[in-house]
Image (tube, rainbow, N blue to C red; front, side, top):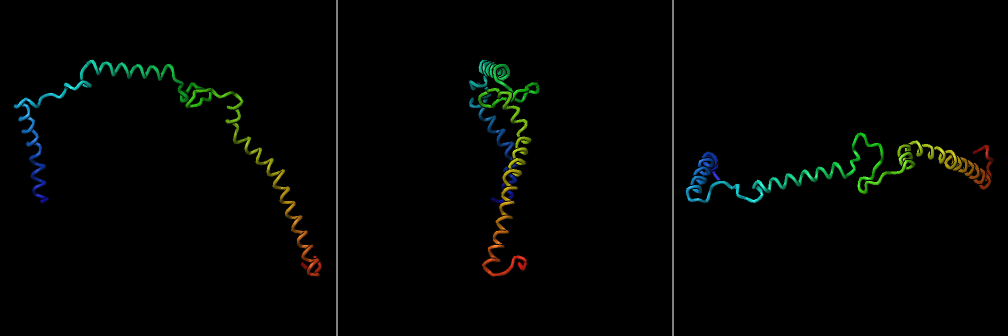
Length: 138
């Protein structure tokens, strides 16, 4: 398209739509489109009542886990309240995990380190024995 044609179209588009609207009103096709069933007052009133009932259901019947006065741990799907011991375990999970890691490190990892150093000294002795060299020379 030519740039001049596009410019002319956009300059005249407002007037063309106005003429088209006036033509539709003259022939009886235009007019208000407020006769749709969803835009009638009874339907609007019913929809507002439905929205209010849903809000009341949400506020009164459902558990809101994000309320500031809520001190229990609540499952979001089932609304089941967690027992106190589970809540305590979850609140102290990092501390419990760090204690378990320290225990593992002390009991298992230090034992493996000792075994590795013992195994290394045995390997050096074996090597010295088979090469007919003294351990002090290694």
